Every structure is written in C-alpha cells, then in structure tokens.
Image (cartoon, rainbow, N blue to C red; front, side, top):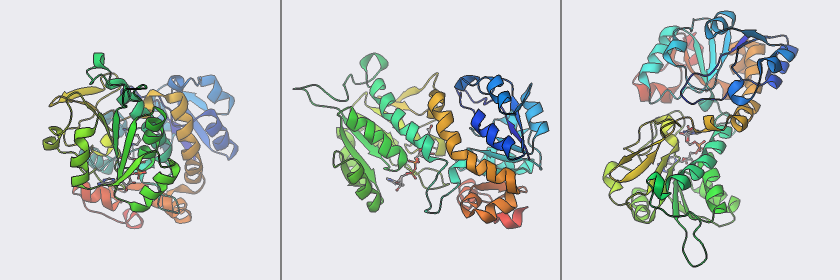
Length: 370
Ligand SMILES: NC(=O)c1ccc[n+]([C@@H]2O[C@H](COP(=O)([O-])OP(=O)(O)OC[C@H]3O[C@@H](n4cnc5c(N)ncnc54)[C@H](O)[C@@H]3O)[C@@H](O)[C@H]2O)c1
C-alpha cells in the first residue's frame, strides 16, 4: 500500500504520525511511504532520518494525498485537508466527530474511509490509541493547572503542595480513567489534597490500589460534585463516554459554588467539553475567564510535548497502521474487531453508532456502508 504522512497543520501541533521506526517497518513489509518535507521537524525528526529508513520525501501536502492510499495523521483533518480526500483514501487519525457535525458531514461527503484512533478498542473494550495521549494529557493537566493557579497568571495564588505549617491546594478530578489516573499521580506527587470522582465503582477500586489510598475516591453524582466544588482550587474534567459528546458535569450555575480565581482544566474538550462554560483554546492562548473562574481548554494538550507524544502515539498506532496497510480495511476489521469500532465514516455513511447519534445522522453498519 502507499502510505502518506502529511505535516500537521492544526494550531500549535508539533506531533507527526509516523517515526523513522514506523517507516522502516512499513518499507520492510513492502509498502511505500511518502512523508511531507519537514513533517517531523516539530518532533526533532529530520527528513534525512525518514529517507534513511526508505521513505520518499515529497514537497507538499497535495503530493502526499495524491501519492497515497492511506493517510496517517495525528489531529482531525482541517478543511483544506478534507478537500484533498478522495473516495479511495483511508484516513487514520484522531477525529473526535461527536461534537462536530460539520466535519462529520464533510468527511462523509468526501467518500473516504475514516478511522478514528479514539474509538478503536482492544479485547477488553479499552481505548488503546487514546490511552497514550491521555497519559500525557493527564500529566499536563495537573502541571498546567498548578501553573495557572499562580497569581500573576490570574490564579488564586496557591501552591499545590503547600509547605510545612500551610495546607495544600485541593484538586478535584472528575473522571478517573487514563487521564484522571495520570492527573492524580502528578497531583499526589506535588502533595496536593486530591479527590477523584467516577461513576464506575470497579474503576474507583483500581484507583485506590494504584494510588495506594493517597487520594479520596468518590462515586460521581451531581450532589457529590456540588459538595466538593466549594473546596476546589483546581478541577480537572476527564470524563468520557466512548464516541459520544462529553456530558456536562459542571454547569455554569455551579461555578458560583467555587472560590474566585480557582482553575478548571477541561481535558474532555476534544469531545465537546464536560463543563458547560468550556470552549476550545490553543497553547498560544490557553485560558479565559468565566464568572471569575479560569478555564484552560486546550484541545491538543499532548501537542505541546511532541518529543514525548509523537513516540508514545506511534508506538500504539503503528501495529494498527501496519495491519491496515497489509490487509486493507475490510480484511483488517474482520481480523481485528477492535479496529472495526474505529471506523467512523465509510462510503458516505456514518458507521459508529455514538457518532451518528451525537451528530443527528443515520447509522449504517460498516459492512453495509462500502
Ligand atoms: N485535550 C486533550 O488534549 C486530550 C488528550 C487526551 C485525551 N483527551 C480526552 O480526555 C477524555 C478522557 O479520556 P480517558 O482516556 O481518560 O478516557 P477513559 O475512558 O479512560 O476514562 C473516562 C472515565 O470517565 C468516567 N465517566 C464517564 N461519565 C462520567 C461521569 N458522568 N462522571 C464521572 N466519571 C465519568 C468513566 O467511567 C471513565 O472511567 C476524553 O474525552 C479524551 O478524548 C483530551
């Protein structure tokens, strides 16, 4: 198969979808890889590093799309990238379609087969291609929140860990999945007082064990959140319902329960946000204020640490990309049912039930869509 790797063009995005190791595995198994000149620069990978492993460097994105059958990317396609998609293309990338009916419709109109990293499942129903970036985003969430709590940046002016004789800040993490666990690890390491809320009791058990009882686990309910918000200095939103738009766990009305200049970090912003007052921001301009509460809602948090994130992402995606290149979409999803749940759009149809429901479009099983 001919596999294309364009340069990411979303604002402040420095990751790239394939490393030289990936190119080597692809070319060793007989595939051709076309990498856009400079695609790896943001992650400190030179064109020559790709060439040394057998990639062909092409001058621009048009050439990548024209040369390739499968396009491997990191972030959801921007409008000029959607315009380059043709029905023969397979697009393999993060899509986050549930909160974005316009992108969903334009991908359907392109006729391409679009496979979303974030809805590919493993044999236990977990999300193996979301997990590595959730690990990164969870760690950044606490770091960024601690920073935004500093007074000159508009925060309350409290140190997360306190000092002897002065108490720590209180961190509330709503959603104790991969993001929540990693945010909690850092918050515990910084010696904050930490609460993690989730609606899955088994998950709360796992968190209690993983964090050696150093966080308070709480069954997530509207009342529990209302009772904790007045104590919070930093609230991290990390809920996910697979493929669906994020539910609001903090409404605008509830902001008034919080201390002024407290900080909200909405990691779930890529699925539409789990605070009613959230809207996507960028690394260049990450925060805004609503009712005296700082909101940090960067939709591509791992993009800020590409030297970590590019490798963490591609370690996870490469086996799937190889499977797709080797067998084509139809055979690959038959061999690996977890990959089937990644197919969000095919043959002009919406092939993921939660995406169809969230965008108000009709659902068609993937086997009937092609
Ligand atoms: N902004 C970014 O750059 C970035 C990066 C990575 C991941 N994310 C996003 O972070 C979110 C979380 O990802 P994850 O990998 O941790 O998902 P996950 O599936 O591992 O965890 C989500 C958790 O939320 C819990 N949950 C669902 N509804 C809840 C509710 N109403 N109250 C409390 N808990 C609830 C689930 O039980 C689950 O444990 C996703 O939306 C993901 O796309 C964003």
